[in-house]
Length: 66
Image 1 (cartoon, rainbow, N blue to C red):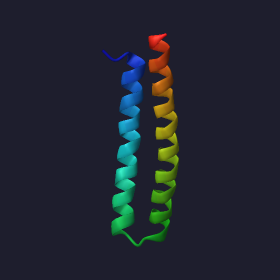
Image 2 (cartoon, helix red, strand yellow; image 1 turned 90 degrees about the horizontal axis):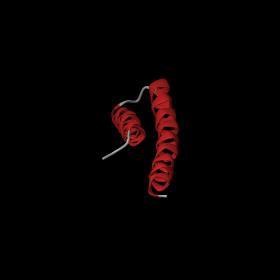
Image 3 (cartoon, rainbow, N blue to C red; image 1 turned 45 degrees about the vertical axis):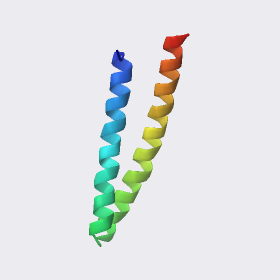
Image 4 (cartoon, rainbow, N blue to C red; image 1 turned 30 degrees about the horizontal axis):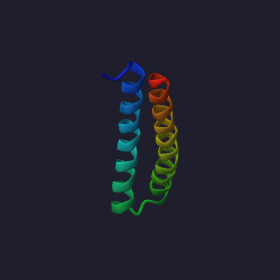
């Protein structure tokens, strides 16, 4: 029952979460400074994107109900 927009948003959230998950594994298992810095930057940026996408999903679903 999802619209194309809802499906895209949900898949993008999962995609960004995958990047966060991989970055956390790197932070737990590597001491390589430049890579750790990029992994942390990735976590920060991807979480911001997830938050934006989640807000977008809520807004889209509200629009469908009105």
